[in-house]
Image (tube, rainbow, N blue to C red):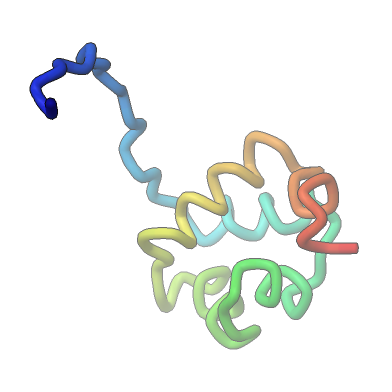
Length: 84
């Protein structure tokens, strides 16, 4: 009656990567996307992507996770159905 013990499972979570302006641009180009489409894919404005790629601002949080995923699989935006 609510006293069962569940087996413990330890998960390892990769730290959030940081990206330079040139790395962000390379990730976008490898995915074959314009700044406008890349911005829509990431859920940010085109001005934000422009600022990242020029080094004026840095992405953080979920944007960095999406950049990591896209860096590891440039086809992810299309394979995932986010970009049709």
